Length: 325
Ligand code: PMP
Image (cartoon, rainbow, N blue to C red; front, side, top):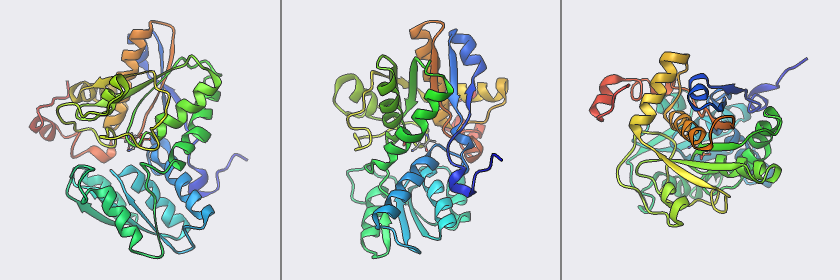
């Protein structure tokens, strides 16, 4: 029998899917790793499990304990599922610029959700710092700390990277990916570069983030502007991203991303989130740069159902000066 035992075993081993229009437009094979098919609905289920397992193994998290995290949402959703499955309480700090649906899902899963004002990382009231302080104030709590906890990167080194290698029979030419904590790009690239030194690793960044400048100039200065993307972009180099062997970077604008997610919806029947839109734009651009005949892998990070009132709401988009294309 081919059976997975419960929520934890349902994480990972996601399909690799050929994206038709992007492949045809670039003459390359553009393949997306279907992370939206994880049981909590995103790429972050892997990291959530690796980090909680590490806390269990080290003894920091005891039976019946409390898991605390600051998250844009998807890590929290993964954590909240796992807390239910393993009998932990869950407290989530979230900035107030994330989709309403994510908050509702977290509450449905039984998490204690604390939506706090969106302020820079340098501010002591930043959601990540509030989560850390709250966990410290309780004896039974652990702070997951996804940005600097390298069990996040390890999840992708031990699972996502090997899966991509196996699913492409080692024929992958480039891995292209947007970045939030950096766990995905750092872990996957570490594994793939060990197997194939000349693979191209391309970081994709949204406007208003510092990562494009970091890869291009070595200095993490914020680019001008803002972005409606969720879960990606960063103002600093996390412990997960530090030392990652990235070849080059590309910036993707919100309008390019919006046009792409609506094209994927209309022409191919996909309902993806914004970071996936960035990823497919980037993969297409890398395909054009490398030339026909290459095999490019990117991540399909999450589905669009959580963004019905934002990315998939035309009035909301119009208020941001964006249109479906
Ligand atoms: N896409 C989405 C939808 C996410 O929630 C995240 C995680 N913040 C990412 C992409 C980025 O992944 P990572 O944190 O591994 O860089």
